[in-house]
Image 1 (spheres, rainbow, N blue to C red):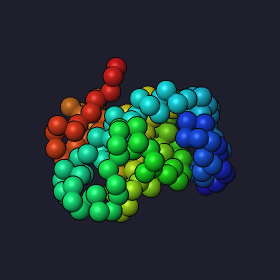
Image 2 (image 1 turned 120 degrees about the vertical axis):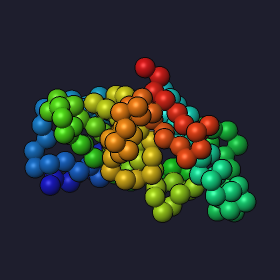
Image 3 (image 1 turned 45 degrees about the horizontal axis):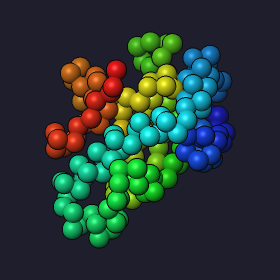
Image 4 (image 1 turned 30 degrees about the vertical axis):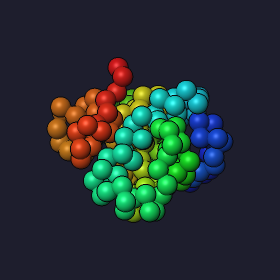
Amino acid sequence: MVEATITLPMFGKAVVPLDVGAEMTPAEARALERFLSLGRGQKTGATRHVHACYQDLRAEIGAETLDGDMPPPATPDDIWRHVTVTALRLVPDRDDAERVFVSLSANCGWDPEHGLQMVWQDGETLVRVSGEDGHVTNARAYGDPRLERVVYHASNSEFETLRDD
């Protein structure tokens, strides 16, 4: 395993560790290049999914409990004030050698125990927002192909989010 650091333009030029295999494959290099070319627009596009993750936990454990630990964001965009990216991993698809998932780990103010994981398929399409569990899609995490388009799989269905495609 080779570890390096990498700068993430989408996240204010945050510098995080990048875990890759002994040698980066061409598919991994392409996915990483695509991911690093994503800008603030793609982060803005991820806001609704990350904010839904926060809202779902707030509804589950109660506003009084969560708000005591973290002041509620005034707007959905304010959710990013409570997210600190910590690491980036490249995860080759087990079924398709040309597909690579870019998995970003983060600490988040609303769930310090589980953190936050965001996954982009081939470095360009956000396919999953969840607590840190290592799964790259909800369909695989839950063994349910009906969840293929689900980005954030919520405890409370009103907070579940889907890809735009």
